Image (cartoon, rainbow, N blue to C red):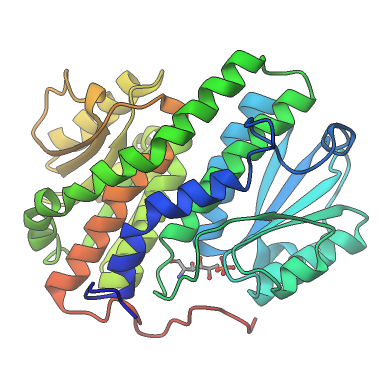
Length: 362
Ligand code: M6R
């Protein structure tokens, strides 16, 4: 049942306030504070983490690396599951594998998790489907509560994963004494405000429609982000290519000058993500360079990050947030843009060609 929406994807984009709220509730203890449902001792025993995932879930792990390293001072490696399970990984300093999977059935991720277990790591399954194979086989579970996701393109599961992962980072940081209670509670407050802010960002459909109308003619696009927005750039590019079949590539903004800037030619669409964080000025200057070379910048930004923009751009803003949660909020317009581009182009939004919702083959 699409609940009155044209596609499951459109419905699931709109379900994100609830997906985030429910997933956050799952990471909130009886005292109303963030909790990972693990004892302090269990958390303290996590010294190094390897995250195993595919596709969008892999991008969630890459955002989480910034949070876990930054807040909990715990090293994190993010591995593409299909590569990891055929490697002979060195696990020195790593205690824990976190397998991230919406379905809990991706064979690559399952095999990577089993491989990690045979290497002696304890395993945590971060899954959306209760009772799935990864949920059953993992030593511990961190559930997302996004509800069933039907559209092949992952949307609400991703923002739910990010919600759980930032909560996990805070819980780990507290157990290890790397964050004070005031900062932990401030992040929790921001997360509690997030469903409302996501709700406001869902109004961006009208603003994004004319941009999507132009974007559908592109043969190729570039997505840019820095810091923890770099994985969101890659996620945005994945959404666009799987839904609209337009070639899209996500780059770290600062890496452009090392090669990819050669791709920029007149009118190449460049979807750029910007938050009001310590990298804002540097990221904006990278965008100015792309613009000077003819790139058509579509800027998706925190409203405080656009005041000093001195290059031509289509600007889409989301409400101001603590930069730490900007990756979650900025994901919303990125999803909507891919959805609207596919809609305008007439591709099959819920069932893109060649793709399956759950990839149970290698
Ligand atoms: O169910 P999983 O999270 O394990 O799925 C992983 C990927 O197959 C999945 O995220 C895929 O990349 C989506 N189609 C992205 O929209």
